[in-house]
Amino acid sequence: MSEDSFSRRLLTWFDQFGRKDLPWQLPRTAYRVWVSEIMLQQTQVITVIDYFQRFMQRFDSLQSLAAASEDEVLHYWSGLGYYARCRNLHKTARLIIEQGLNDLPDNRAALEALPGIGRSTAAAIMAQVWNQPEAILDGNVKRVLTRHQCIAGWTGSRAVQQQLWPLAESLTPEQRVADYTQAIMDLGATVCKRSRPDCEQCPVADDCLALKNACVHSLPTPKTKKLMPEKFLRFLILCNDKQQVLLEKRPPAGIWGGLWSFPELELDEAVNQYCHQKLAMRVINTEEQPVIKHTFSHYHLFITPTLVQYEQDSDKIMQQREYQWYHKDQSHALGLAAPVSAIIRSLS
Ligand code: SF4
Image 1 (cartoon, rainbow, N blue to C red):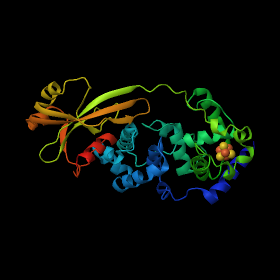
Image 2 (image 1 turned 180 degrees about the vertical axis):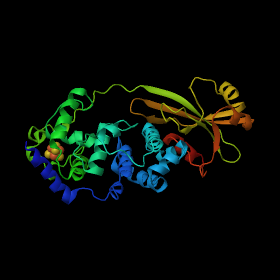
Image 3 (image 1 turned 45 degrees about the horizontal axis):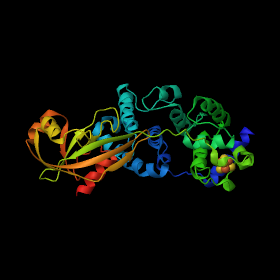
Image 4 (image 1 turned 60 degrees about the vertical axis):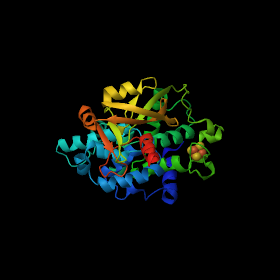
């Protein structure tokens, strides 16, 4: 395979078909590229665009992000999932400001030392913002390279990574690095797609080994599927006479860390006892709603929303733990997990 030829063909293709008007490309600052790269981890461009634009309208600089509360930053991330990304983004913004800096560092090692920035993300920032010849290896690039070079094995394994990184480095050109980086991501997203790749339109089809060996559809090799565990829990839905629901702030780590959610308990836990002890209230009646299934990367969660009629002293609740009454039209921004938002919307 000719390395120059690979990047040259890709750049020629990019000039005609590549994406040059994505919101984070206009203008392509370190702050904007960083936020976009974090949002794009495990998430498609089409989903990220709206989130990115809303996020930039509210937090137009590293300084404004650092100055915001975690609740508000999580609010603008609500629905994107993988909330550790958001908490790390916020933490990193604060860290940079605390260090007396105005912007992200312009070297890869310093970027990788920051929370939430791995090798590929650091390289993407270096390449796209400062045009430095750093190789990236995100999901799209892995798909293109494993197919083009017919590399079998799960791309998350050390053995495959040890083949992919040197390959990605050897293909990255010295010139037009920002365009090349965007080009290979675009090729993976729009031509060398996961299902139904459009090999006839591919600029590097001539020497694609997967195409030659008729194994395009078996690459990249999927991770061996383990049976996903299932978990069950109950959400308590408590509404007051102002059409507000009671929410509880979740611990900073774990699923939906730092977000606001309904008080929750195990399915076999007694609702009456829980409400009495934790919420200082007396249950009059409960009514179970249809079960909601939510799938995380590593397990399925089955939620039983349960409407609770109660008598209570709300002041006691507010004093006990981190609770608040929340109205869906509330101007105060909170981060809510997707199932929590869906339940709140369904109540109105
Ligand atoms: S020829 Fe097909 S499989 Fe090979 S890199 Fe291009 S789109 Fe992917």
